[in-house]
Amino acid sequence: MPSLFQKTAATSPVDKAAAAVDRVAQQHNDAVAALDRARAEYADTLANVVAEDAANLPKLADARAKLSAAETNERNARDALEAVRARHGNAQAAQQRDARAKAYDEAHRAAVRRAALAESIQRHAEALAKDYAELVEQSNTMLRALPDVPDMDAALLRGHVVEQLVRVEMVRQGLPFGSALQPRHEIQPLADKLATTPDLLKRWKAADLGASHD
Image 1: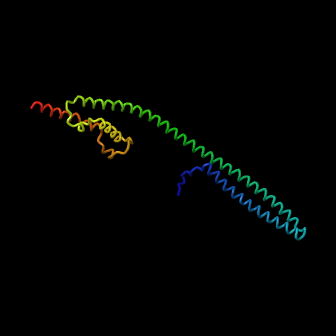
Image 2: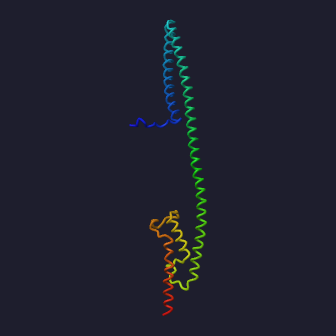
């Protein structure tokens, strides 16, 4: 049961117009029924006058007046029905225009936000491209500088591996680049993967130089 202090929902112009159409349509139906009765009464009275005598002429005049009034009432009810139907149609058209305008406004807000995000992504992409280029350059420098490379895969020195590691990191960060082979929270961060290489190179150096002094 609604609270005494609860506000009822406002009736829209379309609902109001639809209710008016229903109400006036019923009034027109009643007027049509009354007109049918008046016509039947007039026809019956006229038949009695013709078949019998002129004694029923006053009744005929009364029946004619009732018929005329019923015709006027039906015509007025019909005009009123056409008017409220037109009002209902106008209200529906206005509601549809308002809904379409709101839809365009919503799309426009999304477009403005998308443009701003595109600028942000562009800036981050430029920084990412710069860092990625230096990452590849440092990988090549490391590869050229090493006297010996016992294990290319352990040192993560293959170009396609570095590229794949960066793509996997983007997936870990939430970018929808295909489907991850494992849950994002289980993917090891890129920095952690590459952080193991310096210690690996130290071990290679110690093993290499230690062996050369034996």
